[in-house]
Image 1: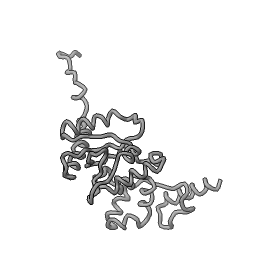
Image 2: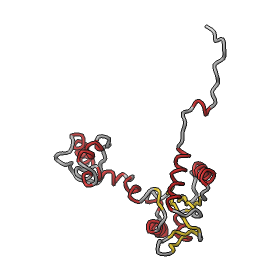
Image 3: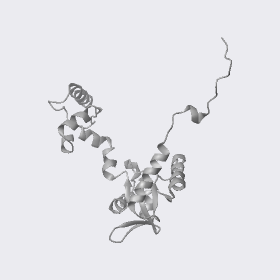
Image 4: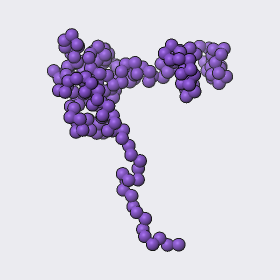
Length: 206
């Protein structure tokens, strides 16, 4: 069997499915900037000292500026503590005199990002400011495993959503158990949770 024509050779961008993550994230940050209400303000990316993950950050900075005309700064938490201040009754966040509309956290997610009081002071300044945080502190905490573990406890989700919604949400929960948690699971916990708690208790006592 012989092909009469050679099959078309696809370019890489034709062979892969579309990926709009970069433009979508840039648009979301630009909309937050617009909601802040000051065109001359800038977005700040909170990064780690000696940041190695710079390529996608620079691509995002370029997309934000080229597509939406918004300036982007890069600062560590220590630099924000050194350069930052809150101004006026609205507590505008200023970095070296530049007003900040959006604080986009690319660092600050682990205890290692807060080695001294300078980093904690910077985080407090950001949270007290009028700038929009991405993510917000509540979403930031909800992304930690400990908070997710607490939300998985019986009755906790019902504090925030209806019993029906809580039941649907639990259908997609993964099991989370603390290495220093209770010795036994709740009596009404699912069998697999009781088994896991028993295994953890046996491991601690061995």
